[in-house]
Length: 351
Image 1: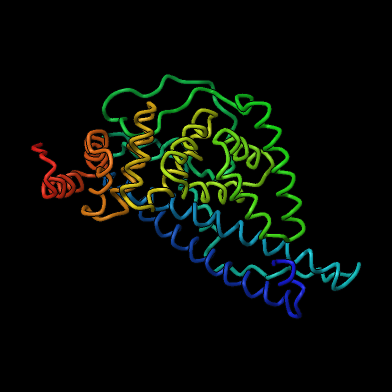
Image 2 (image 1 turned 135 degrees about the vertical axis):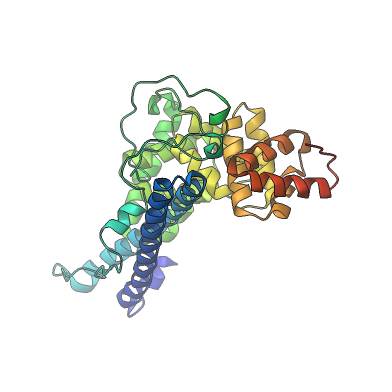
């Protein structure tokens, strides 16, 4: 269908129009990120750490959005490139397409990934935030693993993804590595040919495949310099049924992709609260309480107390205490509102 569409008269102009709209969206994201980064710095300077933590999480959401926009722009550019040899033979026009005219200052793009390096925030109110990424990082730009350090201990760190021991892609099975390498090569070829439809189908199939193979492909895409496609793969996986989503998160963590796991769980918080609660229950039962708390903290931030309380519907015995713990780490006000809602629903809670 994509090739048929690109074969129509005026296809390149249509692609350019769509790319221009995406670039406008990209500029808006950069500007919003710049403003959030400035507010975060101001909040930290004035000691409002709880507010700064919320702003940092909002920037991470923007980063996820920016990765998907970048992937879409890359796809449109590849489709344009595939058109030009046919349209102009060996003399394809060399001018940029479409010209980038960001309305945001140069520092805005950096705001999507964070302010200058700073000391990591401490305290129970920051538990549940993804603190594993390096300041100023970007999806797919993970530094080389540092020597393993003792994990932080104590209640104040509960709910924050724990640093994983040094791990690498050698923990993927040989079969999964071969399948991931083949899929990466096919995806690169499809992007070069401008076949975005087939590329999307490949990513969708991979997201719905075995968890180990999915995690291997995420690692392979990052290693091949294709972080935007890795972000799209995570986005597809965020819509998986609860049990399979939990398996995907476990596979990412088991192979050292903690930042990708955090992104996956952050995006999955947009699903209905009962489903998010089911994912949290499965993560907790698998010994990944830190990720369960991080997911539920995102649910608490993204939904009203009435909606967030529904996360405990399917497994109240497991999820209710986790949900209250996560809410308390967002803020005392969130915990109070959620506790009141759970009591209203007749959960029998007294504390």
